[in-house]
Image (cartoon, rainbow over all chains, first blue to last red; front, side, top):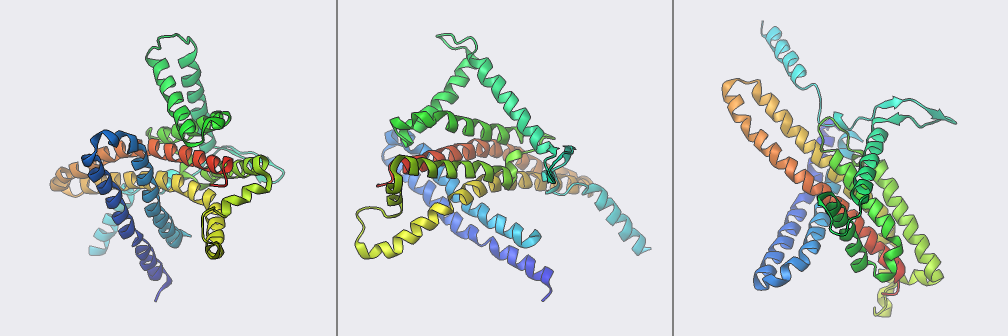
Length: 74
Length: 265
């Protein structure tokens, strides 16, 4: 196989991490909503934690993006 | 005949796609300098950081210059920023973390300023370069490690061996804790840099869609409204991400500081 083609395939495979990130983000927001609907008065207190969890999970997707870029251009 | 036409189309495409999505991150020296063989040119990245620091100083000092008991609009915003970080430090580090508040506040405002200034058209995002964010993260990492050793001496190493764990598990847990400690500066810097990079690339890619749709006739021009609308949505999202990443960087620094203050739990 040509090196260029192999790089492209590798970069595509690197984005598979998005599957896990999708599950994680769904978990975070789904659990926040179900918790917030059970006890709406407690929801504002954990909103900061929600955003923190969102950013930490989203970062995993961006690590995959960085790896894809390293494969393509590195 | 066909070859000429293909060539012309290719030329047209080249003209349209003048700037690739990665071109915006190019560093251009403004004033070239060299000290002892090291390139220390004043670049567009340095210029943006100088602008951000100047604007932040003006914003913060100008806001509290009058210092009235009942704050006006400007003073209220500055006080809100101050209280936001003060609360974060109090909740995450504790009362004795108050002496580190100026550092966390500076860190937060600088990152927020750089992120937001990058959203201004034709400007440059200083935090979209790994070397800038890694320098910030390395300062946090080294500072936290030094504070930990200065406060607790060798007792700081208890951080790597959490209490209340069955003895055999230590063989597994101690290497994991050490690993996670040393990947902190990398994950901290890559998170901020990758967020800024990905956001700006995404906006440029959708801007490219608008232009390439505009070249294929009336139907394309009508369809170009879709990527345009999406780009407006992305601009809003990027401003949210700019706040969020500055917040995450600051709160993680607070959590690391808390670890350094109380290593035994």
